[in-house]
Image 1 (cartoon, rainbow, N blue to C red):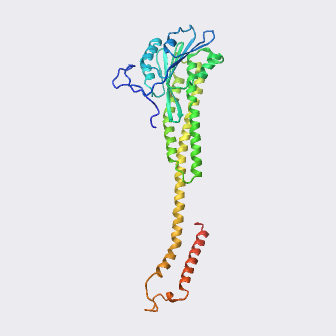
Image 2 (image 1 turned 30 degrees about the horizontal axis):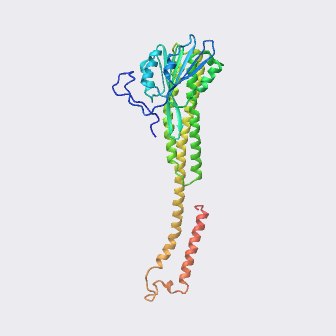
Image 3 (image 1 turned 45 degrees about the horizontal axis):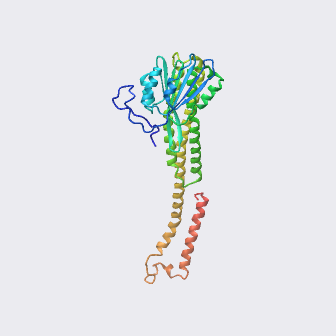
Length: 361
């Protein structure tokens, strides 16, 4: 499976920002909206809406932070309503609809738009889920085109009202969400580490195993993941260095931590890619060594039988001893046949012992 994204492709020639010009999506994920309002001095309130319109029309608290998390795939109509409600940039909203975008950060005048990709590995292989974030003054919008609610722990921390997250800083909340997405790379890489360890055991334990297809499958996935991971690292770095009123210098250390986690995932990726190359080289080396052993054994066997074949060939010639005393007089000897066999055995054993003495066997 070479396609890791189920992308929504815009129609060629469509007007930029036109949400109605995309082709039918390859799948439809059920949509729900989790809304959290907090940070205005009162207790945080968390609500879940199966009707996204209810989440959009609910009044926002003054002086607090409103976080709307869209779980699933929103359609063009809903995205148009969200764009009007929060005055989002149309090109950014278009990227939310057209899945398969690479990780990036785009600061606008009154908002910051970020795209992250989360690696997921299941029975169908490796795929990437797009997470889109809008960080604005007093609000944060997150869109996750997937089925798993990966931000539930963040909402739980908000509801507990402890730590820095209770201060209702949209920039810091954006960091928390980005950190969750970045850290999802570690368990995925752990699964590939287990596969590589199993492949290594098969290579050295089973001489008839063919690990090349398994190595190729792992290497293909890791290469695809590396492309997305380095773009994710670039996105976090851009967020760290961006100069925008909504991006606080006070949160720089936290984004450095997210950047460090992303770099660690990237380093592990490179290490595992090197491991796939090493395993392939080890398999080829062992296969070559086994082939050399086979050729060596066959060559030694042929070498031992060469003088025996020579003797058998000589005494297989049809010369009549009665016609001349020089015509193979050994054929008339009483013990000629046993002596010929004995000479073959002695010669074969002598050559075998010589090969063992030279450690060729």
